[in-house]
Image (cartoon, rainbow, N blue to C red; front, side, top):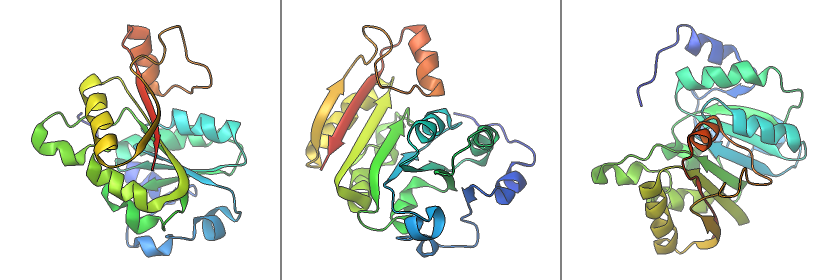
Length: 216
C-alpha cells in the first residue's frame, strides 16, 4: 500500500499530548510503566497493532472507560488521521504510540498487556516476507512475552490466504484457538463487534470477514 506523505504530520504528532514519542527515547522509558506513569491507574491495558485511522480503538475506548487502550501505528501519514478523531474523545483512556511492531518487546514488560487486537493487517503476500506478517510465529513469540497469563489475541481480516496462514501459525506456535470464523457477518453485522474503516468497506462490498480469538 502506497502512503501519501502529509505535510506537517511529523510536527503535529510531536506536539500531540496523547502520542508517546519514540524519537530520541528507548523503550525502557515506558516498559513496565504504562499504568503508573502514563495512565496513572491500574486498569488493564489493551493494544491495537496497526490501528490505521483509529476508528476501532477509539470506539472501544469510548465504550470501555475501565480499560486503558494504546493504539500502535508506525506511519505518521496514517497516525495523523487518528489524532484528528482523538480530539472528540472525552475520556483519557487512550494513548497512541508511533513505532514498528517488531520492537514491541522494548516498550512493554512481560505480562503487561491484557489483550492484543490485529485488524486487517498487511498480508505481505510474498512467501519471503512471511515473517513480517503480524500473525507469523515470529510475532506470536513477541506477543507471548508481553501478554498476561490469561491474555487474548484477536485478529480480523478479509484476506483468506492470510487467515489460513494465521490459523496454521497459531497451531504451530502452541497457542489455543478459542473461536474462529470465515464469515463473521454471514447473517448481518455481528453482535458485539466494532467495525474498522476497512471492515465497513469490505462488508459493504460483500467480502467475507474472517476472525479468530486465541490464547496461549
